[in-house]
Length: 279
Image (cartoon, rainbow, N blue to C red):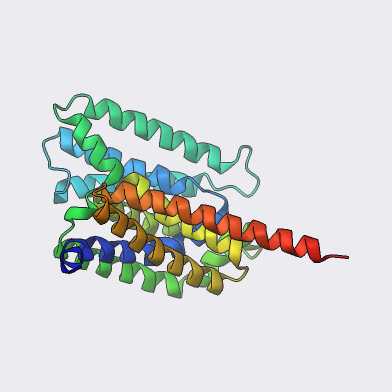
């Protein structure tokens, strides 16, 4: 037991920090109906990191991080500028295109590197098992600052996420608020991808929010449920990784998949019981 605590404490703590921020952002993503925006921004961050790697920077260096952040903020600007009140095509289509092109571009860039395969694997699943205390502290401080700012901006952000037509009707500067949302999102994603990889970042964002939406109606309850599910699933994934000697990031992603299946089965069972009781 002491060996488990010693080895897995840091991965579990970073999972808790990711849960705290991503479960909240996931609520906005679900309400906005832009499910793949996290994947797109995460892939842009990964593309920026791979470009830095090809230029001679290490994947986890400051220049690489700044390049990744620059690519992510560029994506945030594009997504904000293309938010229209009456769109010709759904914004999700553009987000999917950005993700596909960024993923293909990252593969092309890494194909020019001698160790491209290993670096691509690192970008997908991260290095949770080897995360260090400075990374944990830095991420906790950054996410706390972003959470603090979002708390004071929650009014317009929630209005735009839940009732965009109402927001336009109120005269809110929707595109500017969208850029604020996606830019702060970009800071979170750039930091998360560096540690957890694209797949795990997406899971932390979407799965707790989807489970919460299946179980509750109000934002407050959804946030509490999302945090609880993210915490329990992270612990289960980290424990399975240790006991069965599995890659930590992949194990946590699969644990999120199991959690979603269990919540879906619980909701389906509840509906079935309700229907059977009706006269």
